[in-house]
Image (cartoon, rainbow, N blue to C red; front, top):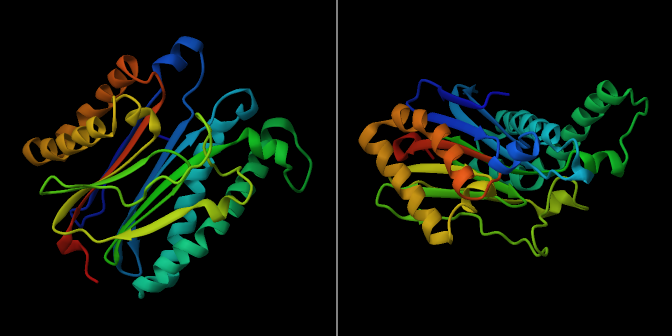
Length: 280
């Protein structure tokens, strides 16, 4: 997995993702537990983009979460592509499958990847992974599918999904419903995790920036207002200086934000969407 990446699938739809190891993790000798995956391509003669951001829990109980987040991002890309191929001709069926099929499918695929990983890592010879092993890979997941049928976003656990319209409005298509205490969050290892996914569709009014980020970014700001103002400034800078310039500067900026702010790992994934791209 790359620490940064930019892709353009030929439609003018650009996506970008970057991550940085948190300042506190560097001091403590801990790895970066965030992961991302981005995919641009053509399915059934339609150009689509998929963005996934995952935040491994860290801590002694979750000692393999850096791998869990990477495997979750890979599993999410795989399953979204399969679902889109099956239901690309119907926006309603696509949304329905993402809401009701994807959560079970991604969990099943993630467990399969973990089984392969733990066998290589620790010579595990079982045919199924138990709850204790699964917990070691714990991670949250955020997804976005940008397609001609619309923008589909989903969330399990903490993190942020923002959509900034070109008029400066900031939309939060998914409001966090976490009911846990303190720094705890829902994740792929939570009992009945598929039921806890929140998946919505969003229609771009004219032109918009889709932003997925781990909570290491929002925690750098004093409040939600400050975080939203940053997101708006990101969009404005892209409009003025261009996508390549802003995304080229972003890795250094998030690293500085971690040093001066949360100290946590930070991962950001972006997509610029024009309403002309949305056909249905």
